[in-house]
Every structure is written in C-alpha cells, then in structure tokens.
Image (cartoon, rainbow, N blue to C red):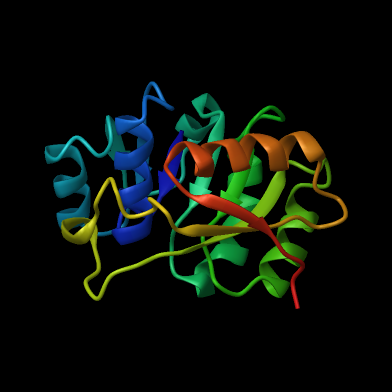
Length: 171
C-alpha cells in the first residue's frame, strides 16, 4: 500500500492497516520533511519520498490523503505511475470534482472515492492513531465507471481497520 500524505488520516490508516496485518509494506509520499522523518521513525511507513515516483508501481493500493484541493490534480499523476492492477482511493470530503477527475484518470474503473467520518482536533503524523477508524463510518462513493471488485477490495480494507462502510452517491 502507498499512502500519499502521512498526516492524521493517512498516517492513522497506515498504522491501522499495519496493526491489523492487512498490508506487508507501506510506502509513504509526503512533502513535509518533518512529517517524513516522523513517519519513518514511528514505523508508520517502510519507506517515504517527497514526490510521486515510479515506486508507486509496486503498490497494489494507493490512498490519497492530502488536502481535498490537491486530490484531483494528483489523480492523473498517480495513473501515470501505477499499473492496471493497482487500486486507487482518496479520503477527501468533497466528491464531485474528485469523482470526475478519477473517472478521467482511471477509465478502467480502478478508482473509488472515499471519506472517513473520523478525525481529531490535532493534525499531522503526531496525531495519527491506529484506532482512529474503529467504530467509524467510512463513506465509499463509486462512480458508474468504478468496478465492483474495486469497491469490494477497498471496502474490505476499511472494514479491516474497524470501520463500517456506507455507500453513498456524490451530491
């Protein structure tokens, strides 16, 4: 799994997936040097870089956990670096523009939008917790193009970290 943005949500997902034994390795992408250092030091990720690279080709799932304003612009880049077997999801709260960008970047249907209903008053990797998603709802918002197996596999991850999965349309 690769997590782009190892702050509160991305970092918590990495910790939770690791704790639950759902992932073998976690690669991180993070622009903030202090956050990269903390993500490595805490075992949140196995390796981390400051930009999207061909290393994403090794991931079977990429989670975009950056501010919502950056997700749509990252999707075409993620598509360029990942293989057709890699699933892609996000954690942004606004779905319309992200779904449109996801459909354009992944016409093969391997993108599904998502959003956890979880958080804290603190941010960054220092606030990340492996139990953040326990008993939380995770909203999954597939587009008509999203493949059913993609929804199922991403939903299995969210359930594996303790969340209930709720499917909703963008609106």
